[in-house]
Amino acid sequence: MAKGYKINWTDAHIAYIRANQYGITRRSLFEKLVNEFDDLDDNVNFNNMKALISRLELSNGRDGRMVSGHTPWNKGKTGYMGANKTSFKKGMIAINKRPIGSERICQSAGYTLVKVSDTGKRWQHKHKLLWERHHGPIPDNHCIRFIDGNRQNIVLSNLICLPRAVHATLNHHLKPNTKDADLNKTIILAECVRQKVRSKQKGCHDG
Image (cartoon, rainbow, N blue to C red; front, side):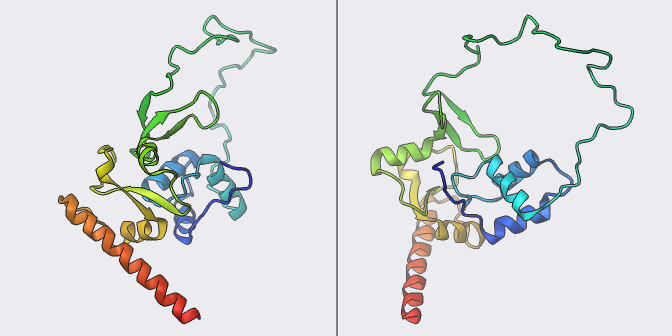
């Protein structure tokens, strides 16, 4: 994520965080947030969600203190314990390190991710890579949607590039989740037209 990039938190995102953050870990809250909203900014991650919560001055009621009666694993021991025989040593390569080109499924959102690098942003969405390979960079404030709603059906004919405003409307008010992919596409394109009409009308009123 570029330095200075501003996450597009909507009122719905913030309201959901306020309503669901108490009594659970921040990690659990992040997983719930990702599962609830398909229109999250692509740069949203666990750390910038925590930063938002800090700005909102929210407390989840969990202070992290040890429960009474619990015995710590290092009770009675002092000083450096030293490395054990299974400790990772400098220069070693983890046996579970995945090569570039490997794929995995994000358990919290169901998207297929592809490893593109060993440094920086290592994993990227497979469907976005496919789209950009054929159509170029995704425009600002746009996202790629699966026409049939199946995030594992990663073929070009099942992908469509939409303004985020249209994507959000489809998610919350007009879900195109029929078994007919052609009908789904018609619903999606019809909402794109309605969005353009609303935008034109707003421009006329503002003028």
